[in-house]
Image (tube, rainbow, N blue to C red; front, top):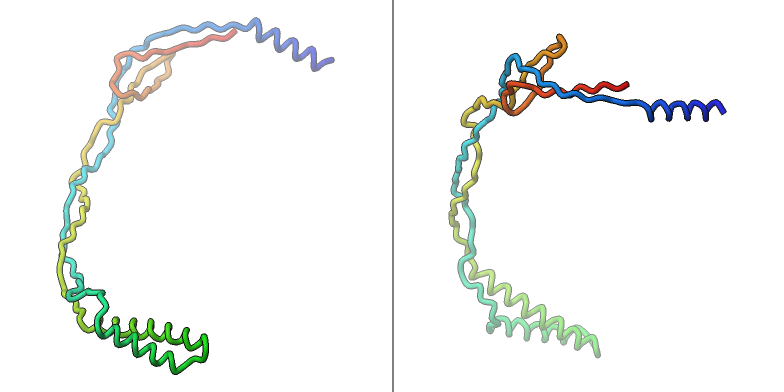
Length: 167
């Protein structure tokens, strides 16, 4: 019962509570700039020579006489290995391996590499100078004998104050 009475009395006191709001303008005593240092960066392009190797020569992947001879030799060797169906499989594998080996031997003897150079460039940034820039203004004013400050983007001549009285 006590809790209910406290709740009702609190609700009644809030329902009859009132407030009054007044707007006032107060003169700014002085404004002081707030500075920030900004670093200006200058782009610099640095270039250097890079060495690389490029394949020169025939990169011909055609089947030559050496590949055919290697495949034939592989079939002959495969024929000596197996019996029945194993012999057929050995001929096929021997022919493929013989042709592959002969083709690679031909390709590796004709290939050569040439050393070449290319220019690479990278952009870096250098701190050129620091510059002092105004970031904002601190506006000082006195209200009811107390000094306050308000930070704004521009210096002010007057500050708007909202005074709220609740009763």
